[in-house]
Length: 273
Image (cartoon, rainbow, N blue to C red; front, side, top):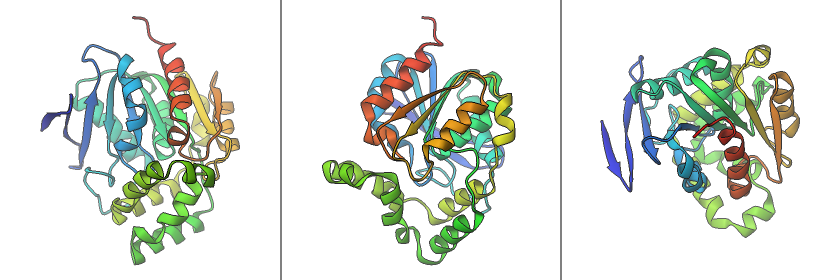
């Protein structure tokens, strides 16, 4: 199923386990492909602020992660192998053999899995505001229990406080409200299942085997995935580089132009047109 909306094409792909994932394509049909992956608790619209710039150079493919946005909600807990295979399912369904990748937070965790297990499909990886390992499990278990018992609204304020600095919230209330609304409307079941995937994730051992050029973006004020987490990823991936942005966790929202500039300079460096 696909439809053309607002100059782009959107639709659903179905994974091998029957989950429908919502996707959207923007940009020129003959351009190289850039696949974008959203953070925990958001959806593909988190990339709206970068879309116009990304689409100038790339055929941009966004999708809602399983349990998020318009994609199906799976009742069972997720694992990063499943979330990584979902990203590949989108490319496969659209007939795309190779792409570059940009993911933030949970999306960056998906990107790490892809680099380890499907590196031959990707030209460049942008891993933003992310981590390879996020203990303690008790913290995730408490969040999962809260969401299951009280709904996702019970965690929105605390999550937003970790995602943005107070000064940004004061200067850009509309942007913060837009992201808070995404979180508020995310399925509690999908959110809890994704939290379980992060709780159980430890990708540290595989990072040294990534042969895809990688850029790791960190937010210097990020409390959710602190700069040292991203720097550890970059130190483990051969040849990886680090870009530091004056931002908290959602650096693409706090520093939209700087984020796009860093990501495009890196990904375009691998393209010959």
